[in-house]
Length: 135
Image (cartoon, rainbow, N blue to C red; front, side, top):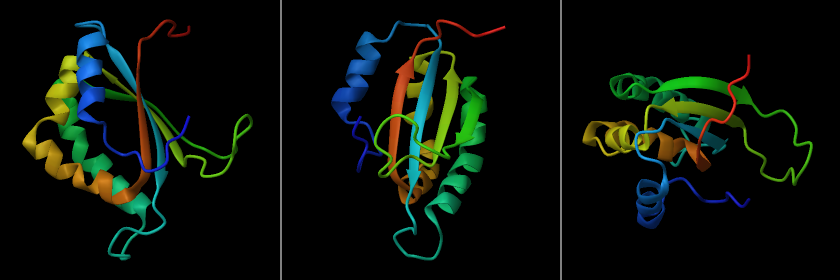
């Protein structure tokens, strides 16, 4: 998987998600994130900018019924190439793709998302269905 310089989905990727993901089914978004060392103005780290985004996005997530399932800091790549390994992996569950699109197309969310763009070197995002939740 090549994640370099990918932060935003293309219009084609969004259209495919809407068309092909099962309607009304919950979706877990797997976020694979690598922070910039410094933001564009050099005044803060990418991690700090992304943390601000994380705080500001919480009300939008709550409004659509989304929740953070898990967050982990990547410490070591065991299988695969370790060059430019991600810093963080997040799992966020949304009630449906429709709710994800509702949130991410909200003009106020888009303003808050500027900090996501500011802070990330790359931000992979994969939509997944839940097959097993564990005991």
